[in-house]
Amino acid sequence: MTDTAAPPVFDPSWVRSDPYPQVIAGTEVGEGTRMPLVNPGTGVEVGSWLEATDAEVDRAIAAARKSFDEGTWRRRPPARRAEVLERAAQAIRTRVPELIGLDCVSTGKVFLGGIGYDGYEAVNAFLGAAATIREAAGEVREAAFPPGLFPGDGPRILSIRNREPVGVVAELLPWNAPLFTGSERIAGALAAGCSIVAKPSEESPASFVELAGILREAGLPEGVFNVVLGRGETVGDRLIRDPRVDLVSVTGSVETGTRIYEIAASTMKRVNLELGGKAPVVVFADADLDAVATWAMLAAFNNMGEVCVAGTRLLVEATAYDDVVAAVAGAASGLPIGDQFDARTFIGPLVNAEHADRVRGFVDRAVNGGGATLVGGGTVPDGLNGAFVAPTVLGDLDAGAEIEQHEVFGPVIAAHRFATEEEALARANSTQYGLSASVFTGNIERAFRFADRLVAGNVQINHHYSADSHVPRGTPRRKSGTGLAGVGAYQAPKSIDLNLG
Ligand code: NAD
Figure (cartoon, rainbow, N blue to C red):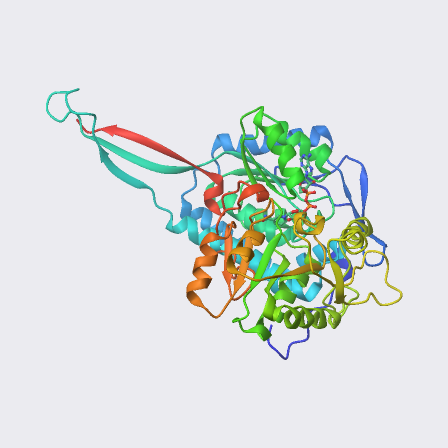
């Protein structure tokens, strides 16, 4: 899009009038209960979807298993697999407004922001996975037995180490960035050669049904990518317990990941967990404080704070604390709140009113029960419903307060001051999470020293958020998960030794 092009406008006809179905072995089917698809900003039902029946889940797993065992996809040369992913990327690119629009209408995600970020990164995920698999290489070594077992040096052994696809993947996905997060996972799994049964969140099923069509048209063989729709405790539960599934991949909350990890242990499935976070944004007084205010605001309020790596804890050196916190609160107060499809909106509705109540509950308990003070933020304009939550800045956060220790997943930032680097580090590392963190300072030695000691898989210096999701990232620490990232998350190393005599 050029600067002069008119911004895309959401077209309600993008939402199917028929309920969104399952996609099994390349065919759309639907026998289950009809569930509503609701725009959280208006409360209006905009469409519907069908919850997969037991028989449909069974057929989807069978289709994935069959395609994997027959090898129609996994045995294709990597370059041929890459071509399919590249064609899919191009098709997604041409349909970004529609696909992102489907995510926005049911989750409240802001349309233009979603097109610019989620849409771009969904395409990037498929191109990145294709590039990875084109470049993939194994290892070849010469090995030997211990001396004395055989005459001379014994047989020469050529040891080849390669990476196989792990098998059939159950991919359980969240609602906060359905196409973007889903594309990252699916592209990695497909590049690796896996067959998949994906379950998008019950809040955002539509874009994944369309993605299945895109992949089919791009040349993905039948049965390699199947989509089942439904709730976690029903459809998700069947997927994770099924012995035909080799890997359960979960992007979701710590509570969900913990439950699934326990269940999967009984079948010794591999489990990849990408879970929640509580990222600290650590600011030293020698940082560029004007830039800090913008980054801290974006870190906390981008996508209404419904981001796993959102910077929700603002730790500021005491001498700069008042200025930084006032600047962030000032920025928050000016963020336009409204319809997610209005081009002026920065803060749309949260995913539903129930989640918004949960977010307000965290704020009320922090402010009224002690633990933090209300510094400022925005105000929800009259006429908007209960799914909207204004960006909120809390200060003087007590160590160990509930709002410091739990992921809120809403537009709330809680600040506190520190006197020394040691104190800042201890506080930054004081939660059960370890997904992401950022540090702002003008002192490069301190930046590296601090980054080195932060308990987080991803650390950013003088910015927040990883740029370009295809650049290799770290793995989650603590309860933020066990996940490997990218194509490697869906591969299992294998060695084959050859006796050369
Ligand atoms: P969630 O944990 O409620 O659900 C995630 C997925 O798991 C959904 O598809 C859900 O239906 C399914 N599920 C839930 N319970 C299940 C069960 N018992 N058995 C099988 N499947 C089950 O998460 P959410 O509310 O959809 O998403 C928000 C969460 O996701 C936040 O905690 C956020 O931090 C996290 N997240 C993490 C990352 C990451 O990369 N680390 C990215 C995006 C979101």
